[in-house]
Image (cartoon, rainbow, N blue to C red; front, side, top):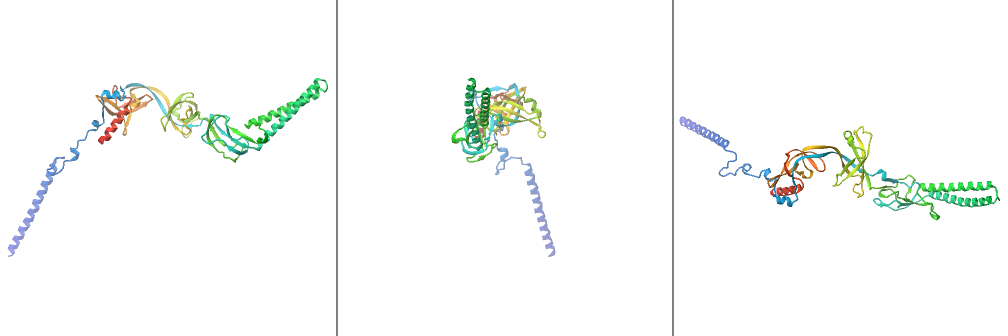
Length: 404
Protein backbone atom coordinates (compact mmCIF):
# COMPACT_ATOMS: atom_id res chain seq x y z
CA UNK A 1 0.00 0.00 0.00
CA UNK A 2 2.78 2.40 0.89
CA UNK A 3 4.64 1.56 -2.32
CA UNK A 4 1.59 2.39 -4.47
CA UNK A 5 1.19 5.73 -2.72
CA UNK A 6 4.86 6.57 -3.32
CA UNK A 7 4.57 5.64 -7.01
CA UNK A 8 1.48 7.80 -7.42
CA UNK A 9 3.28 10.81 -5.79
CA UNK A 10 6.25 10.50 -8.10
CA UNK A 11 3.96 10.41 -11.12
CA UNK A 12 2.27 13.65 -10.01
CA UNK A 13 5.62 15.36 -9.51
CA UNK A 14 6.77 14.38 -12.97
CA UNK A 15 3.50 15.65 -14.45
CA UNK A 16 3.91 19.07 -12.74
CA UNK A 17 7.53 19.27 -13.84
CA UNK A 18 6.53 18.44 -17.40
CA UNK A 19 3.82 21.13 -17.45
CA UNK A 20 6.27 23.75 -16.15
CA UNK A 21 8.88 22.79 -18.73
CA UNK A 22 6.41 22.94 -21.60
CA UNK A 23 5.19 26.37 -20.42
CA UNK A 24 8.74 27.72 -20.28
CA UNK A 25 9.48 26.44 -23.79
CA UNK A 26 6.29 28.03 -25.14
CA UNK A 27 7.13 31.38 -23.46
CA UNK A 28 10.62 31.38 -25.03
CA UNK A 29 9.16 30.61 -28.45
CA UNK A 30 6.58 33.43 -28.15
CA UNK A 31 9.23 35.93 -27.05
CA UNK A 32 11.57 34.94 -29.87
CA UNK A 33 8.75 35.26 -32.40
CA UNK A 34 7.82 38.79 -31.25
CA UNK A 35 11.43 39.96 -31.56
CA UNK A 36 11.73 38.62 -35.10
CA UNK A 37 8.51 40.32 -36.27
CA UNK A 38 9.28 43.29 -38.63
CA UNK A 39 8.25 46.78 -37.43
CA UNK A 40 5.04 47.92 -39.05
CA UNK A 41 4.03 44.42 -40.28
CA UNK A 42 0.30 43.94 -40.04
CA UNK A 43 -1.03 40.91 -38.13
CA UNK A 44 -3.98 39.04 -39.49
CA UNK A 45 -6.41 40.68 -37.10
CA UNK A 46 -4.46 43.75 -35.91
CA UNK A 47 -4.31 47.24 -37.52
CA UNK A 48 -1.23 48.49 -39.40
CA UNK A 49 1.31 50.75 -37.65
CA UNK A 50 -0.12 54.29 -38.38
CA UNK A 51 3.26 56.04 -38.15
CA UNK A 52 4.69 54.07 -41.03
CA UNK A 53 1.55 53.75 -43.11
CA UNK A 54 0.56 57.39 -43.12
CA UNK A 55 1.97 59.19 -46.12
CA UNK A 56 1.49 62.90 -45.66
CA UNK A 57 2.80 65.37 -48.19
CA UNK A 58 6.35 66.42 -47.60
CA UNK A 59 6.73 70.01 -46.36
CA UNK A 60 8.56 71.15 -49.51
CA UNK A 61 5.72 69.82 -51.66
CA UNK A 62 3.02 71.65 -49.68
CA UNK A 63 4.93 74.97 -49.36
CA UNK A 64 4.60 76.14 -52.92
CA UNK A 65 2.18 78.19 -55.00
CA UNK A 66 1.47 77.22 -58.59
CA UNK A 67 1.15 80.25 -60.90
CA UNK A 68 1.75 80.44 -64.63
CA UNK A 69 3.19 83.51 -66.31
CA UNK A 70 -0.23 84.95 -67.16
CA UNK A 71 -1.37 84.72 -63.55
CA UNK A 72 1.87 86.29 -62.39
CA UNK A 73 1.40 89.21 -64.76
CA UNK A 74 -2.28 89.63 -63.88
CA UNK A 75 -1.46 89.69 -60.15
CA UNK A 76 1.09 92.47 -60.60
CA UNK A 77 3.95 90.33 -59.30
CA UNK A 78 7.39 91.41 -60.52
CA UNK A 79 9.96 88.63 -60.92
CA UNK A 80 13.59 89.77 -60.97
CA UNK A 81 17.01 88.22 -60.40
CA UNK A 82 18.95 88.64 -57.17
CA UNK A 83 22.31 90.28 -57.60
CA UNK A 84 24.80 92.83 -56.37
CA UNK A 85 23.52 96.21 -55.14
CA UNK A 86 24.66 99.44 -53.54
CA UNK A 87 23.13 99.77 -50.07
CA UNK A 88 23.19 102.90 -47.97
CA UNK A 89 23.74 101.35 -44.54
CA UNK A 90 21.88 103.15 -41.74
CA UNK A 91 22.09 103.31 -37.96
CA UNK A 92 18.79 103.28 -36.12
CA UNK A 93 18.40 105.26 -32.90
CA UNK A 94 15.35 105.62 -30.62
CA UNK A 95 13.83 109.06 -30.10
CA UNK A 96 10.80 110.89 -28.75
CA UNK A 97 8.80 113.77 -30.19
CA UNK A 98 8.68 116.84 -27.94
CA UNK A 99 7.38 120.38 -28.04
CA UNK A 100 9.48 122.93 -29.87
CA UNK A 101 10.66 125.09 -26.95
CA UNK A 102 11.44 127.92 -29.37
CA UNK A 103 7.72 128.00 -30.27
CA UNK A 104 6.25 127.23 -26.84
CA UNK A 105 5.23 129.81 -24.24
CA UNK A 106 4.18 129.38 -20.62
CA UNK A 107 1.56 132.12 -20.23
CA UNK A 108 1.59 134.16 -17.00
CA UNK A 109 -0.57 137.22 -16.21
CA UNK A 110 2.46 139.40 -15.17
CA UNK A 111 0.29 141.18 -12.57
CA UNK A 112 -1.71 139.81 -9.65
CA UNK A 113 -5.44 139.69 -10.21
CA UNK A 114 -8.72 137.77 -10.30
CA UNK A 115 -9.84 135.74 -13.33
CA UNK A 116 -13.23 137.08 -14.42
CA UNK A 117 -13.54 134.77 -17.44
CA UNK A 118 -11.52 132.10 -19.27
CA UNK A 119 -12.10 132.20 -23.02
CA UNK A 120 -10.18 129.11 -24.26
CA UNK A 121 -9.89 125.44 -23.31
CA UNK A 122 -7.23 122.74 -23.56
CA UNK A 123 -6.73 121.51 -27.13
CA UNK A 124 -8.13 124.67 -28.71
CA UNK A 125 -6.28 126.38 -31.55
CA UNK A 126 -5.71 130.11 -31.03
CA UNK A 127 -4.49 132.95 -33.22
CA UNK A 128 -1.96 135.64 -32.41
CA UNK A 129 -3.65 138.43 -30.43
CA UNK A 130 -6.70 136.33 -29.52
CA UNK A 131 -8.04 136.95 -26.00
CA UNK A 132 -7.32 134.04 -23.64
CA UNK A 133 -8.74 135.31 -20.35
CA UNK A 134 -10.05 138.49 -18.70
CA UNK A 135 -8.66 139.65 -15.32
CA UNK A 136 -9.38 142.42 -12.87
CA UNK A 137 -6.32 143.88 -11.16
CA UNK A 138 -5.69 146.75 -8.80
CA UNK A 139 -2.17 147.12 -10.19
CA UNK A 140 -3.53 147.70 -13.69
CA UNK A 141 -6.00 150.26 -12.34
CA UNK A 142 -3.19 152.17 -10.65
CA UNK A 143 -1.00 152.10 -13.77
CA UNK A 144 -3.82 153.34 -15.98
CA UNK A 145 -4.66 156.11 -13.48
CA UNK A 146 -1.02 157.14 -13.46
CA UNK A 147 -1.04 157.32 -17.25
CA UNK A 148 -4.18 159.43 -17.33
CA UNK A 149 -2.74 161.83 -14.73
CA UNK A 150 0.45 162.16 -16.73
CA UNK A 151 -1.51 162.83 -19.91
CA UNK A 152 -3.51 165.60 -18.19
CA UNK A 153 -0.34 167.18 -16.85
CA UNK A 154 1.11 166.99 -20.33
CA UNK A 155 -1.94 168.71 -21.81
CA UNK A 156 -1.67 171.53 -19.25
CA UNK A 157 2.07 171.81 -19.83
CA UNK A 158 1.47 172.15 -23.57
CA UNK A 159 -0.97 175.00 -22.99
CA UNK A 160 1.41 176.84 -20.67
CA UNK A 161 4.33 176.29 -23.03
CA UNK A 162 2.46 177.68 -26.06
CA UNK A 163 1.35 180.72 -24.07
CA UNK A 164 4.81 181.45 -22.68
CA UNK A 165 6.33 180.97 -26.10
CA UNK A 166 3.96 183.49 -27.65
CA UNK A 167 4.56 186.04 -24.86
CA UNK A 168 8.30 185.60 -25.13
CA UNK A 169 8.20 186.06 -28.88
CA UNK A 170 6.25 189.28 -28.31
CA UNK A 171 8.87 190.45 -25.80
CA UNK A 172 6.24 190.55 -23.08
CA UNK A 173 7.78 187.98 -20.71
CA UNK A 174 11.31 187.03 -19.92
CA UNK A 175 13.02 184.14 -21.67
CA UNK A 176 13.41 182.41 -18.32
CA UNK A 177 9.63 181.91 -18.05
CA UNK A 178 9.57 180.39 -21.53
CA UNK A 179 12.42 178.01 -20.76
CA UNK A 180 10.79 176.95 -17.51
CA UNK A 181 7.53 176.14 -19.32
CA UNK A 182 9.50 174.20 -21.90
CA UNK A 183 11.19 172.10 -19.18
CA UNK A 184 7.86 171.34 -17.51
CA UNK A 185 6.49 170.18 -20.87
CA UNK A 186 9.44 167.87 -21.44
CA UNK A 187 9.00 166.34 -17.97
CA UNK A 188 5.28 165.79 -18.63
CA UNK A 189 6.05 164.09 -21.94
CA UNK A 190 8.56 161.78 -20.22
CA UNK A 191 6.01 160.91 -17.53
CA UNK A 192 3.43 159.97 -20.18
CA UNK A 193 5.93 157.88 -22.12
CA UNK A 194 7.02 156.11 -18.93
CA UNK A 195 3.44 155.27 -17.95
CA UNK A 196 2.71 153.94 -21.44
CA UNK A 197 5.81 151.74 -21.38
CA UNK A 198 4.80 150.28 -18.01
CA UNK A 199 1.41 149.29 -19.37
CA UNK A 200 2.99 147.98 -22.56
CA UNK A 201 5.35 145.79 -20.53
CA UNK A 202 2.31 144.27 -18.84
CA UNK A 203 0.68 143.62 -22.19
CA UNK A 204 -2.36 145.82 -21.61
CA UNK A 205 -3.77 148.93 -23.23
CA UNK A 206 -4.55 152.27 -21.63
CA UNK A 207 -8.27 151.64 -21.11
CA UNK A 208 -10.77 154.16 -19.84
CA UNK A 209 -13.88 154.67 -17.70
CA UNK A 210 -15.07 151.97 -15.28
CA UNK A 211 -12.84 149.34 -16.88
CA UNK A 212 -9.57 150.71 -15.58
CA UNK A 213 -8.93 147.55 -13.54
CA UNK A 214 -9.81 145.03 -16.28
CA UNK A 215 -7.39 143.67 -18.84
CA UNK A 216 -7.34 140.88 -21.41
CA UNK A 217 -4.53 138.34 -21.64
CA UNK A 218 -3.81 137.62 -25.32
CA UNK A 219 -2.04 134.86 -27.28
CA UNK A 220 1.54 135.76 -28.30
CA UNK A 221 1.31 133.79 -31.57
CA UNK A 222 -0.66 131.10 -33.42
CA UNK A 223 -0.65 127.79 -31.59
CA UNK A 224 -2.47 125.14 -29.60
CA UNK A 225 -3.47 125.36 -25.95
CA UNK A 226 -1.70 122.23 -24.70
CA UNK A 227 -2.30 122.98 -21.01
CA UNK A 228 -4.69 125.19 -18.99
CA UNK A 229 -4.46 125.74 -15.23
CA UNK A 230 -6.95 128.57 -14.72
CA UNK A 231 -10.57 128.68 -13.54
CA UNK A 232 -13.04 131.55 -13.29
CA UNK A 233 -12.75 133.43 -10.00
CA UNK A 234 -9.25 132.16 -9.28
CA UNK A 235 -6.79 134.61 -7.73
CA UNK A 236 -3.38 134.48 -9.39
CA UNK A 237 0.02 136.05 -8.81
CA UNK A 238 2.08 137.80 -11.44
CA UNK A 239 4.23 134.68 -12.05
CA UNK A 240 1.48 132.04 -11.95
CA UNK A 241 1.71 129.59 -14.85
CA UNK A 242 -1.87 129.55 -16.13
CA UNK A 243 -1.52 128.18 -19.70
CA UNK A 244 0.91 126.62 -22.15
CA UNK A 245 0.59 127.45 -25.83
CA UNK A 246 2.74 125.76 -28.45
CA UNK A 247 3.03 126.18 -32.18
CA UNK A 248 2.97 122.54 -33.37
CA UNK A 249 3.76 123.39 -36.99
CA UNK A 250 7.25 122.23 -36.04
CA UNK A 251 8.40 119.88 -33.28
CA UNK A 252 11.62 118.60 -31.79
CA UNK A 253 12.79 115.00 -31.69
CA UNK A 254 15.09 114.25 -28.77
CA UNK A 255 17.62 111.45 -29.43
CA UNK A 256 20.21 109.73 -27.24
CA UNK A 257 23.32 108.84 -29.25
CA UNK A 258 25.91 106.23 -28.18
CA UNK A 259 29.44 107.59 -28.15
CA UNK A 260 30.50 105.35 -31.05
CA UNK A 261 27.81 106.84 -33.32
CA UNK A 262 28.48 110.51 -32.53
CA UNK A 263 30.56 111.06 -35.71
CA UNK A 264 27.44 110.25 -37.76
CA UNK A 265 25.38 113.11 -36.26
CA UNK A 266 26.31 116.51 -37.65
CA UNK A 267 24.41 119.75 -37.23
CA UNK A 268 22.52 120.47 -40.45
CA UNK A 269 22.50 116.81 -41.60
CA UNK A 270 19.27 115.24 -42.85
CA UNK A 271 17.90 112.17 -41.07
CA UNK A 272 14.84 109.97 -41.56
CA UNK A 273 12.26 109.86 -38.77
CA UNK A 274 9.84 106.89 -38.60
CA UNK A 275 6.90 106.48 -36.24
CA UNK A 276 6.89 103.24 -34.26
CA UNK A 277 3.13 103.19 -33.55
CA UNK A 278 1.93 103.65 -37.15
CA UNK A 279 3.20 103.91 -40.70
CA UNK A 280 4.62 107.41 -41.13
CA UNK A 281 7.99 108.87 -41.96
CA UNK A 282 9.49 112.31 -42.58
CA UNK A 283 12.86 113.97 -43.07
CA UNK A 284 14.23 116.11 -40.24
CA UNK A 285 17.28 118.31 -39.75
CA UNK A 286 19.79 117.88 -36.94
CA UNK A 287 19.62 121.18 -35.05
CA UNK A 288 21.77 120.42 -32.03
CA UNK A 289 24.30 117.81 -30.86
CA UNK A 290 25.31 117.85 -27.21
CA UNK A 291 28.93 118.51 -26.35
CA UNK A 292 28.86 116.27 -23.27
CA UNK A 293 28.51 112.49 -22.87
CA UNK A 294 26.61 111.19 -19.85
CA UNK A 295 28.77 109.58 -17.21
CA UNK A 296 26.25 106.80 -16.56
CA UNK A 297 24.68 106.31 -19.99
CA UNK A 298 27.77 107.09 -22.11
CA UNK A 299 25.42 108.81 -24.52
CA UNK A 300 25.03 112.35 -25.84
CA UNK A 301 21.83 114.18 -26.63
CA UNK A 302 20.82 115.46 -30.03
CA UNK A 303 17.84 117.43 -31.23
CA UNK A 304 16.16 117.12 -34.61
CA UNK A 305 13.86 119.80 -36.02
CA UNK A 306 10.87 118.26 -37.78
CA UNK A 307 8.20 120.04 -39.83
CA UNK A 308 4.68 119.15 -38.66
CA UNK A 309 2.24 121.07 -40.81
CA UNK A 310 -0.31 118.22 -40.79
CA UNK A 311 -0.03 117.55 -37.05
CA UNK A 312 1.14 113.96 -37.59
CA UNK A 313 4.01 114.12 -35.08
CA UNK A 314 2.46 114.51 -31.66
CA UNK A 315 4.61 115.27 -28.60
CA UNK A 316 5.23 112.09 -26.61
CA UNK A 317 5.29 109.85 -29.70
CA UNK A 318 8.16 107.35 -29.85
CA UNK A 319 10.05 107.30 -33.14
CA UNK A 320 13.03 105.65 -34.78
CA UNK A 321 15.81 107.78 -36.27
CA UNK A 322 17.72 106.45 -39.28
CA UNK A 323 21.14 107.98 -39.91
CA UNK A 324 23.15 107.14 -43.02
CA UNK A 325 26.33 105.36 -41.98
CA UNK A 326 28.04 104.31 -45.25
CA UNK A 327 27.43 103.07 -48.78
CA UNK A 328 28.16 99.35 -49.11
CA UNK A 329 28.48 97.18 -52.21
CA UNK A 330 26.99 93.74 -51.40
CA UNK A 331 27.19 90.65 -53.67
CA UNK A 332 23.59 89.51 -53.22
CA UNK A 333 20.61 91.72 -52.46
CA UNK A 334 16.86 91.69 -52.99
CA UNK A 335 14.22 94.37 -52.89
CA UNK A 336 13.07 95.04 -49.33
CA UNK A 337 9.38 94.32 -50.04
CA UNK A 338 10.29 90.85 -51.32
CA UNK A 339 11.02 89.65 -47.78
CA UNK A 340 8.09 87.94 -46.06
CA UNK A 341 7.71 86.21 -42.70
CA UNK A 342 6.42 82.65 -42.39
CA UNK A 343 6.20 81.59 -38.78
CA UNK A 344 9.57 82.48 -37.32
CA UNK A 345 11.37 82.44 -40.69
CA UNK A 346 12.17 85.20 -43.13
CA UNK A 347 11.70 83.93 -46.66
CA UNK A 348 12.02 84.92 -50.31
CA UNK A 349 9.61 83.41 -52.85
CA UNK A 350 11.83 81.87 -55.53
CA UNK A 351 10.49 81.29 -59.05
CA UNK A 352 10.94 77.65 -60.14
CA UNK A 353 9.26 76.73 -63.44
CA UNK A 354 5.62 77.66 -62.88
CA UNK A 355 5.62 77.82 -59.12
CA UNK A 356 6.87 79.99 -56.27
CA UNK A 357 8.72 78.24 -53.45
CA UNK A 358 9.57 79.99 -50.14
CA UNK A 359 13.24 79.86 -49.32
CA UNK A 360 14.60 80.74 -45.89
CA UNK A 361 17.28 83.43 -45.94
CA UNK A 362 19.64 85.18 -43.57
CA UNK A 363 19.57 88.94 -44.04
CA UNK A 364 22.11 91.70 -43.48
CA UNK A 365 22.16 95.49 -43.89
CA UNK A 366 19.34 97.30 -45.66
CA UNK A 367 18.02 100.65 -46.80
CA UNK A 368 14.69 101.83 -48.20
CA UNK A 369 15.14 99.88 -51.45
CA UNK A 370 17.42 96.85 -50.99
CA UNK A 371 18.34 94.35 -48.28
CA UNK A 372 21.46 92.19 -48.23
CA UNK A 373 21.09 88.39 -48.34
CA UNK A 374 23.89 86.66 -46.43
CA UNK A 375 22.72 83.06 -46.82
CA UNK A 376 20.09 81.07 -48.69
CA UNK A 377 19.95 82.80 -52.08
CA UNK A 378 22.65 82.43 -54.79
CA UNK A 379 23.27 85.33 -57.21
CA UNK A 380 21.03 85.26 -60.27
CA UNK A 381 18.14 83.50 -58.51
CA UNK A 382 14.79 84.71 -59.84
CA UNK A 383 12.42 85.78 -57.08
CA UNK A 384 9.16 87.65 -56.52
CA UNK A 385 10.13 91.24 -55.77
CA UNK A 386 7.00 93.38 -55.78
CA UNK A 387 3.72 91.68 -54.93
CA UNK A 388 5.24 88.88 -52.85
CA UNK A 389 2.55 89.45 -50.23
CA UNK A 390 0.03 88.03 -52.74
CA UNK A 391 1.97 84.76 -52.87
CA UNK A 392 2.19 84.65 -49.09
CA UNK A 393 -1.57 85.17 -48.86
CA UNK A 394 -2.24 82.30 -51.30
CA UNK A 395 0.19 80.03 -49.45
CA UNK A 396 -1.40 80.84 -46.09
CA UNK A 397 -4.83 80.14 -47.54
CA UNK A 398 -3.73 76.77 -48.98
CA UNK A 399 -2.06 75.55 -45.79
CA UNK A 400 -5.07 76.63 -43.75
CA UNK A 401 -7.49 74.69 -45.97
CA UNK A 402 -5.32 71.54 -46.09
CA UNK A 403 -4.51 71.60 -42.37
CA UNK A 404 -0.76 72.07 -42.68
